[in-house]
Image: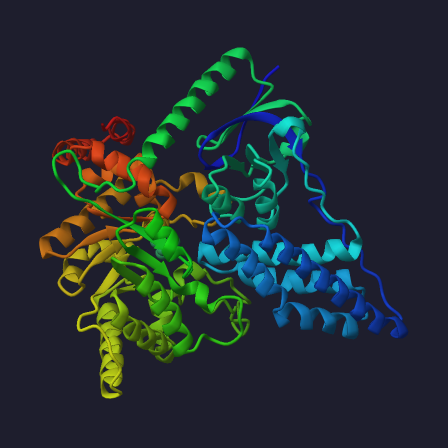
Length: 575
Ligand code: PEP
Ligand code: MG
């Protein structure tokens, strides 16, 4: 009998193949006391395993095909860097020596402490770094415990499988992808987990967060995976098989059609040109963005420069990174200033005891930069210097008032004066814009638009703050709703305010790259869409088939509906 299960669809596509379970996810870490004479031997054992783990990662790195997107190799590079991070090695050795415990247990203490730090970060992307800590530490622990994970081998005559696992590491994915894996189904993870990001990059269908998948699915049984809907059907009947085979064939045809759009302009049937831009995180991504046909970069998240290290990146180091990107991108590149979360310390001195802070509402992004002007100044100087090499715009995250925008602009002007006095080359004009991701900014958009040179709507945060839903809390994920009337109202208001003031309005949250919302956004008057490079062609397809004038009328009418369900249906029916 068929069994229908539901998880979170994170990478689109239909796969029909047999189950192959991947075992050995969880590790049982023993802890035992060492005698004084055994301590140094244990340190040597730790370093031996650490060396072997690095060798393994280098082997994986060497096997990544040239054609693979840059972000895949970057995951492995991050793990290699983390392996050498002293907060892992030195702390573990200190635990072995001071607490006189075995290497596996010492590493576990290091891991738990580091994961707790990442756990508290408000930025969803940074929070996923705790997965890196987990993967790096468990690779070393497996070697210490002689319990290395066995990756399933590909079947006879090239038969492919659906991998069913508790979780998969970036290294597992790279190795498995070379065996033409049909899909992944994992018990853990969410839309922003590394499995999800990598599966999307490699175009492998994936469903994550399917609790108990390994218990419910049988080895070798046939499985259908719908990576968009998040459905998994075990032992499907003839009817389900026929339905999904048709859907799979339609998707293959659709993908072939997309490839033909590569060199074509993103202009609608009634002549409205739309700028499709890329969101990037690493300098290497600039190439991927160009290849995808993006017209420029609408969001470069600079946080990655600050991660996995103890000291802050110097001005020269940042300049070099920005210069590389700016030189590689032919269009405009919008660089977002630091959007790190902040002081997560609990004030234990309070009489009512420690209270957990809410980092998403705390000292993050522009608030942190205004509190620490030296931190901001170094980044801004590097950005202005990089502007000599291309078309740079500076984007300020988490703006919630005009005052913040003005303060930041004053600091940027001061940095420009300094550089000018030093005789450094810079572009004459470096527009400064605001991210609209706090409801207050959307509500006050008309005032802000008189001062900002551009807006970019960050729907990931705008939705979280409007609906009071923590975007990284699995428990409330189901309430995260881009089509909530309040969210749509704020988006419309922001676009209208930008248009009224004659400044460009872009959107760089996930919503901009989701083809389900392209028609709606066109109808709201959005003309600049910034997204993961992998989504560019999909969105372009919808743009070139659309009549924007008609969509404007249809969307305006849909938003008048007072019944949310009716409004949703009308939006879904936009054609
Ligand atoms: C957003 O909030 O929509 C956004 C693009 O920024 P981030 O996801 O980095 O917070
Ligand atoms: Mg944001």
